[in-house]
Length: 406
Image (cartoon, rainbow, N blue to C red; front, side, top):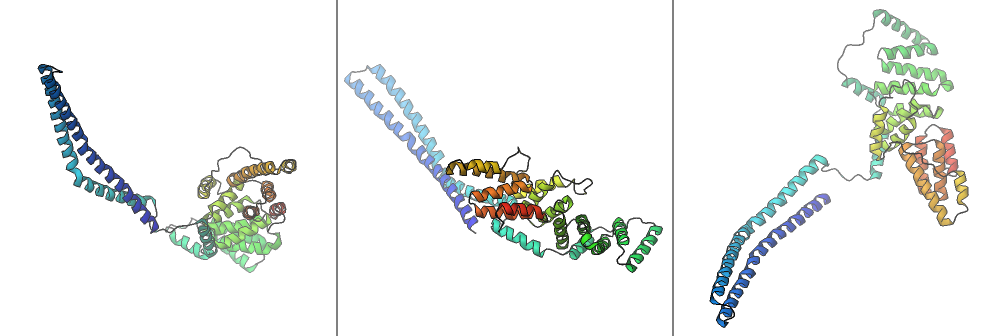
């Protein structure tokens, strides 16, 4: 409501100024020619007085009178024209001002309808972050998402599978069902169910693989289950897939497949800023043959736009090292603070736009501690925990630089 009150008020002010200018022009036009005519009449009287006093001869006086009378006639015609042009439009001027007011309001409203969001409430950052987290917690589960995706698919014939292969698959399923702890059988079942497009069945078989392997399961084993679920839901990262990815990252924080899908989850849940930081750590480390490699540049650009940053690679920006911090001890308090602050801002910009290894994050939180910026230090620490989720070594290094974390 406040937006519209301000908009209408500004439009009325603009129209008032315009109407004032129009009326002032009319008044000026009415008054402009009258003083000129009065001046000519005074000159005419002065010529007559000079002729009577003998200061000019009769011929010169007659010539001057004719010239002055000619100018009086011209001024009179000009005054009449100005009066017609200014007098008649008084009502028209007010009408024009009212018309312009309506036009301005109409165009403003139309432009806002096209470019704006009528009726949409203010969305402060804190509220948007809360809404994103609420959606992340309450978003659709895997079964629901997979069912919705299946319903959206067109009715197309199943992949051409030979009867011989179908018979072999039936025997494999039967054998695996009778031997629930047969690791090799389940691995084969995962591969062949996926090849037939039975992604849900392949995921169930992969869950069995993880159960059988137990503590021996690798990070990539968990990523494979997540990929099957994500594909079965049309690219959607469900809460179940998120949990599996978290376990994959816990086992290997440098698993780039897991990091990519973690960033995808963050992008899908309204946190493009976090997705950007995660994906920046993946860029340049894309595994060979990764199915998502071609999508990453476009997704990075979208995440950068959502985060409001420019991720174009920039010149290397070095943060304050231990040697820098030691050298700073010999400076005055003011100079030392200025030096560290400059380095901090440069490093913070680099990490926000390009990402970086845990060593640089540790440099940043250490420098923020030196500056006494504890609140900002905790914000960077929380972001680092998100970026290096699953990489216990990296998080421990950064927390140690921050004095042990929170």
